[in-house]
Amino acid sequence: MTEIRDGLAGAIGETPLIRLRRASAATGCDILAKAEFLNPGGSIKDRAALGIIRDAEKRGWLKPGGTIVEGTAGNTGIGLALIGRALGYRTLIVMPETQSQEKRDMLRLAGAELKLVPARPFLNPGNYVRVSERLAGELAATEPNGAVWANQFDNTANREAHRTTTGQEIWRQTGGRVDAFTCAVGTGGTLAGVGLALKAHRPEVQIVLADPMGSALYEYYAHGHLRAEGSSITEGIGQGRITRNLDNAPIDDQFQIGDAEALDAVFDLAEHEGLLVGGSSGINVAAAIRVARKLGPGHTIVTVLCDHGTRYQSKLFNPAFLRERGLRVPDWLERTPIE
Ligand code: PMP
Image (cartoon, rainbow, N blue to C red; front, side, top):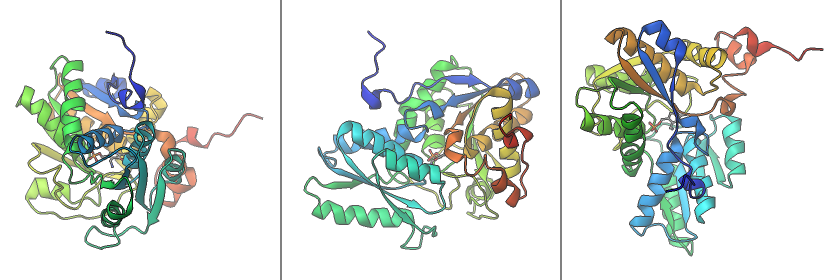
């Protein structure tokens, strides 16, 4: 056995599980975060991208030189494009215009062909997911090497990737000492996949949804109907329907987290832990703290740091952006170079 990882695909996963010292000290619990921003594409979505590609290869849908088409908030597209380059596939990414400039730039560097569309609800044919499905159908008929639609929301190869990797890693890294797992949902792949894996080892593990404002899932799991209110500056999370990846997800509890609370967590991680992460990570850590307070001292709560903060310099880490929205700007964010 050597410790060499085989190419970019081999470098995905096996991320460190980091004890968040301040959150742990404040709650008397062990609050542990999976450092998914350390994946080669900078986010947890590398795992889903690789799982979907390997599944499509196995089924014979994706052939050498074939095209991968996907609608994405950005991170899945970055993962697909990088893996595509490493394995010899072309990628065509459809993304809403509302996502950060950094994600657009990263997609270009990763070699993706990018189509930007206005943000539209899922039922509108102009919605980025629906556009990607149509484009994949057209390209499948015209491209010499064929095309596949990754379909991260309803393709359960996504949650399988988390069930067989992320979830098993958490179980192994904690030595089975885990009382709760909490994270936000975009496709639901992470929450459902990790949830299924941990429940199979220990059915008492609490699986907890962390939901941003503007998402319909909190109401659904709390009261049985899909209903959304408000909005959030976080990217990549929030959902208005039960995707196939969420179907039968073993969810025990749910919290709704607003932007101010999520940003407090983001800035706290940056200032006191040296961990630079995006807004969904803030929601996850804020929810882990709430779970810790609900369960009481002595418990172990695991969550996820989904992507790297550098992806949001023009938004979460931009004082003007924060001020326009009435959000707190930490002093250190406004420091200018010493003359
Ligand atoms: N955080 C970020 C930054 C993301 O891009 C995503 C995926 N869109 C998620 C969290 C949610 O992960 P999942 O799709 O597995 O629910």
